[in-house]
Picture 1 (cartoon, rainbow, N blue to C red):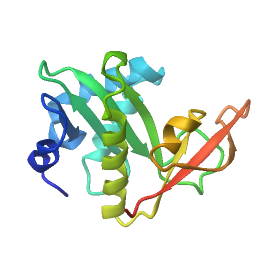
Picture 2 (picture 1 turned 180 degrees about the vertical axis):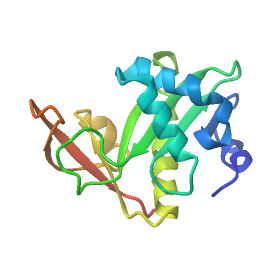
Picture 3 (picture 1 turned 30 degrees about the vertical axis):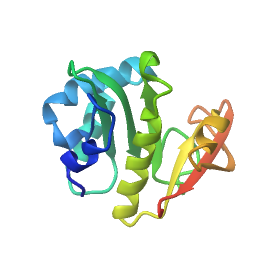
Picture 4 (picture 1 turned 180 degrees about the horizontal axis):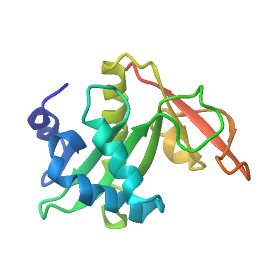
Amino acid sequence: MEQRADRNAYFMPGLRLLRIEEDLQLMERAAGWFSDKWAVPAEAYLESMEAACGSRAVPRWYLVIDEKDEIVAGAGIIDNDFHDRPEFTPNLCALYVEENWRGRGIAGCLLELARSDMAACGIEKLYLVTDHDSFFERYGWRFLTMVRDESAVSYTHLRAHETKA
């Protein structure tokens, strides 16, 4: 795994890009932050983040922290992001950048770190459930198929990205 200092050397000045296991004191705050953004209980995020501290490839959680130690962006990798096709795993999930930080390439950095982490773990493909097609196409994500959400009410796009550069 690359060193945090090396990763942040080429990241945006004043921001830190990190994996949740690199700063365990952020875990509860991060769980609450993700919960506020996605309306999933903080306990579910916390449980997944605690599991991320093991040696498995999935789950993984990433944060971007500013100079004031505030979370400005984050993303995760989980087995399944609430869809009906369990064979398409792992899934990038919960990507969010605070509105005042958008347009600066932060999401792209998170996507690249997730991709490179999965490649380092031997995972060849990463999946994503989203209807934000043009945004993710810019970063190499390609439409794969339609999937039904966990409630079986609606369909959405499943996209895929090869992890090898």
